[in-house]
Image (cartoon, rainbow, N blue to C red; front, side, top):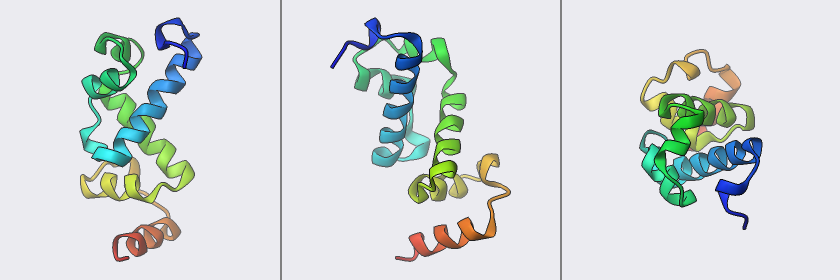
Length: 102
């Protein structure tokens, strides 16, 4: 694996998002932290906030979850009343409900 510090900016951003999604799935959406992402990538936390605030990074994760229907992250966003999931389509609400009840 190439060191993240030597990657191009777009590749670096993509890797940060990938790690944030993995952390959301592993530890929970609300537990995505700048230090957690940085530690996973073995970089300084300031590199994470160079691109996004932690709130913006969480929003990116939720938007990705909505686009790809990652029900685990969507259900976590619903549980904390994240505004990004306020107008969730009925079809997706049913899927999340089914996911939670399984």
